[in-house]
Image 1: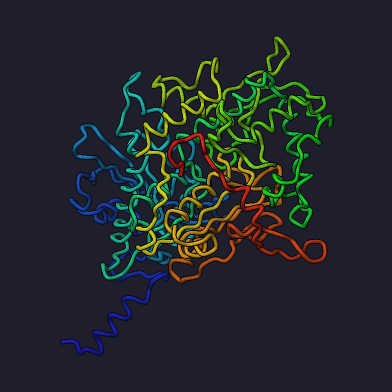
Image 2: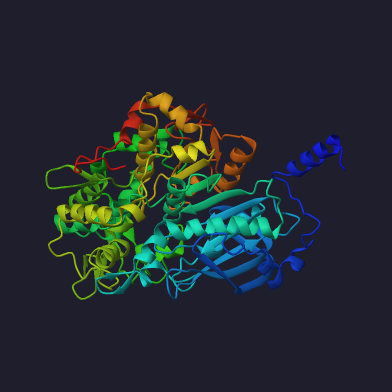
Length: 596
């Protein structure tokens, strides 16, 4: 019989390993010995662990990978070894249903009682090896799902319609939130079983994703309060009904104004905007760190008559920003273009300014917000007609497919044309998407009190020059959470209250889910997940966020804004600027109810 003293010692020793690598004696000592089908099968969640789900043990495969090198915007370049454990499960109430999940497992010597779920991009529910390595780097089992779509490379649009007009609603639920919930619940249990973590010990659970992956992250935090201890969320595609249609706004602006600018003309407007607004933050470094000041002080009409020149291109390639699934639709392979040589026109300026003003209905009411000054005009890209030697409409792939397939329920890749489409049409499409898929895709519930009560922490980042999902979309959600959760507090007090568990960081010059080729000195925060882990496990709340890959090393948390002071702008201060904050405030008066 153990004495009380030795019982206390045993209890203490069993609990001190949080955040540290540990290997119980009955866990295989090496990655090679752990990475067997038999061991993985024995570690599967027990039958009945998740009600309504049946795991197929025979589907288990294991693959040992050693000394593989990876790099990404979301984690530093690294060489890692891991075991790929893949298996399938089914929802017992759905005949023929099969969902596949993959988990990368670290070496027993580096496992730190952590699990990480990773998200997708565009219409893909996962981002493959662009996301999973981050889990191994932080000593976690890392997972992704195929959503039940047939393969890890099959995107949602391929399974959304069973036939014209007939929606596969199970795919909507899975894409919307269900698949990632199941991935996380099963993955955390698998991690515990693989490394035989006692029930008395905590396995920390985290999430990381950007774009669609960012929306997927919020879908979990809003619905399943205690599922994740922490999350690193980037540029989320929330407000889905508005966001997807918004990709068509630039096309309709061009059609309405009857001017289709050569891409080089809009690119020149962007470069002139960057040059004019660069120093507004107190330092000239090629980065517009204060797009809010740019909005207040830069007059786009000053670009009128400026020459532009772009050489002819042979086509091919794409500029997809963050994740490849997005690139396939918003940035398709480029067609050959002729030499572009001209001057910025009043018509080109009118197109650019109308886009930047945001979508407004026929009564002038704000329907949706736009990109920040100095962001690219990717959605406004035009196509060159070699027969007429003119530039014309090029319908946004993301917006066109959303309307044609997901709203009009036609099994087609995009809209045939935009004939008769007006700003009011776009508004109607936005409301249709919002209403039809509100429970599954809108993902804007501002009440995070459950997540807060569970002790969760979230770091939310967004590139300030994002040309796919406007940075203001994240700011608006942040403010909605602040107002809804702390209505009795003033602005500063409610911001401080929100800071206790939710912090937003805008990345100066950042593009969509990664650094910006037009402002490379802006960099991107590669260690956001590690910062979340420090906040969760060590209580180290980040006053600022570490940045990397450019000349800006530190990011300010919103609503504070960067200002360089001292000789030649050598000292960064994060300042409160009410006039700047006001530019990030939106009144969507085109709607009869709040648009969170």
